[in-house]
Picture (cartoon, rainbow over the protein chains, first blue to last red):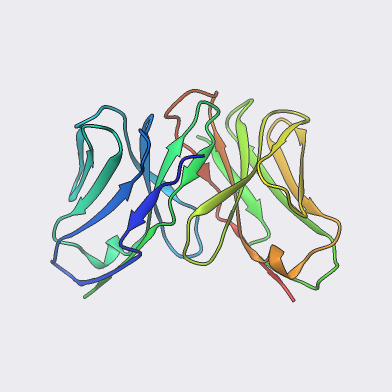
Length: 110
Length: 114
């Protein structure tokens, strides 16, 4: 089972600042998904990255997949309080089972 | 549209009591179904998954069991709860098994064993 390492564990920033969270592995990812989870709710898929070097944008969120497909990052520009949540990376297998990282808790204060 | 329902939202149970959590999916057929558990503020750990009625695969040895009596119904059970069974339990479904399919999660059940 591949180990997904996320960093940092916790990030607290002011509204308007930028932030980056990371997801790394010693093995190559087949593909990688990023989820956001709000307190008391289930995770919601943000994006799936598949190709090495891929960059995807979702409004103020930018997702990058490393060339070697061993790492990924999520960058948020001009963070807002609504971006607060637990950001999880996960690798799906062919059965749809997800191997999750431990997550990065992001808190954006007004 | 597809929806997933999970209940109850919160549950407080004494040690040694039984457990039954239910999850149902609407608007799709033959989904893959999953039970995950999450420790506070941390990642999710897969407990069980099912690709069809009566087909259950367990990912980790534990005090829990799962059943799928109908195509869109998934049940998580225990005969005798332990303190270590406390946690946030999430049911999820996905489409036919292929890489990169999206998982859709229920609202979760917060279980506290006292």
